[in-house]
Amino acid sequence: MPGAHGLDLCQTLRQLPHAPAVVLVTAYSQFAVEAFATEAVDYVLKPFAEERIAQAVARIRARRGTPTSTPDALGRILAALEATRQEICRSGARVPVESGGRILLLAPQEILFCRCADKRIIIHDRDGAYPAYGAVSLDRLETQLTPYGFFRAHRTFLVNLQHVRAYSPWEGGRYVLVMDDEARTEITVSRLQAQEFKRRLQVLI
Image 1 (cartoon, rainbow, N blue to C red):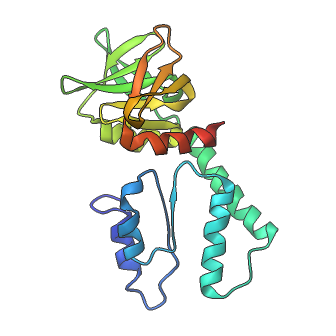
Image 2: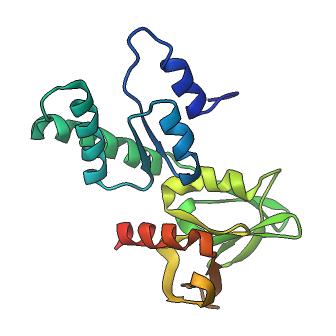
């Protein structure tokens, strides 16, 4: 939504005579308090399981005093969400990087991790490391790549959880990830992101 975001939309919708129930679905946990201040019914973090969406739907129906959703109705909702997710994965999204004087286009699933170094974004795949093409930030990549299973492990690292080979607890409540590249690159998960990492990992197992 150019010039606005989901919380702005919530504020606008609550002014309507018959305001709709709103459930925010996002990859960012830090806006939950603001979301509920706009009277959002629920706040769902991505990636989510079917059961989590079922809870959100049940919460809406309970607030409105309507019967619990039937299995068929809930199934249609979940099927629509899954179709949307698959459409995103089929959309042909690519990340442009600089390689040998050309612009190389990498599919999200090819990327192992992205890192910020000397004010540049470096993209790693199994064949090497490439500077990101154009004015791009790690924050922007996080927004674009989260639906593909990426996780902000640290303020300077964005990792593809599908390429995490192993992990181990570390001092200070942090974790160390071992990527499945040839070098077995180790990436630290910050203490602030440790709980989110465990939650995301459980979804993938």
